[in-house]
Image (cartoon, rainbow, N blue to C red; front, top):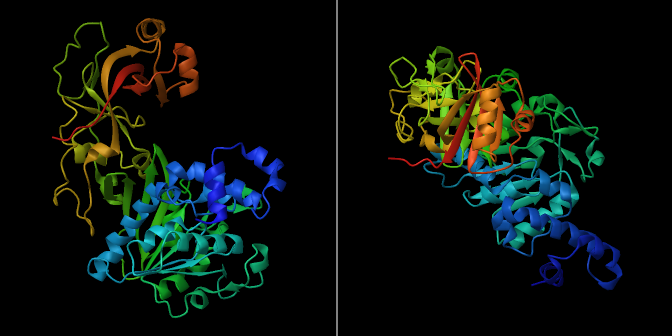
Length: 460
């Protein structure tokens, strides 16, 4: 263990401000780097556990840790890329991946675990140097590193803007590397503001597209989770084989587009989560017909007077909240036919299971359900959060009073509702709790308070 790594281990739980103020006590230790590394390790403990377990890794800035992929999203991207590139390589043997905007190197690290060789390139020389050090500390011997600013053939002279030693075209950076896949994560900041259009990011993927596809069959591009999927597909045009929303920890973290120069079909839209992938074609959603809840039974108010056809909102039913990746990709009508569930409203994207929490969510989709070039649709349980309905109440004085009396502590969510979640919590005057969850939702044009308890999905 190096002296620097020993210092990190000894002082990992120290007050970092005090370390900065007393930097003169430790001659030979780069205290600013040590502080950034300590702060980085605190974040990486949960973000990338494999890196946290190696105390020789350095983190040169707070920003590079904030912007790097998490272990979960890196693995999901890796699975997506292998789904296509692996199929063209007889199971993945011999795949070569070029990461042209390497950053801290987390994505390159995970690519290296499943490929023959990885080319890592990063414009920032400090990051590039840290990544080279970290790859060695992690014992990786199949990553080649370099430090260039990626530019289109008609650009140049901008390398100094980011500190790179020089600018280079895609072909100049790759040389004879011969990648099967090129991966890019363009910077989404310009003049201290966030940008979302592809052409505003750096490097400009639109300007580089043809040279990228000339150099590799597959090109994967990470975009902001705020990117508009339809706009992205329109701008990138042909060769888009899949566009995927990737979620983790209850958030849509990123959008990833995979282009294939040999593909001319309709782009697959995917929602990828831990343990589940939902894939569909745009025309499937356009042609699908949603099933809607047809009746509401208000708790403690007697029978509905209608036979329950499985589409009646009432106590005992299971309410489903789609994962954020599903919300981003928006297969809202198609979910009804794929899983046999009923939607609460045209603009209320919550669903109802008629009887039990198992129903069709535990099945794999059959080949008849959706003809896609690549089949990988996993158990629906990971695509939804499931809640057992305890009460269905009107959003009026009586309903609010009943909630306050019976459920003084609860989590609160409002969607397609007159109030947002924070305002509804204030209106209900309830404390925090993970046991009970109250939803404010519009159902059949009626504002309802749906009191639920969280349940874990169990496949049959």
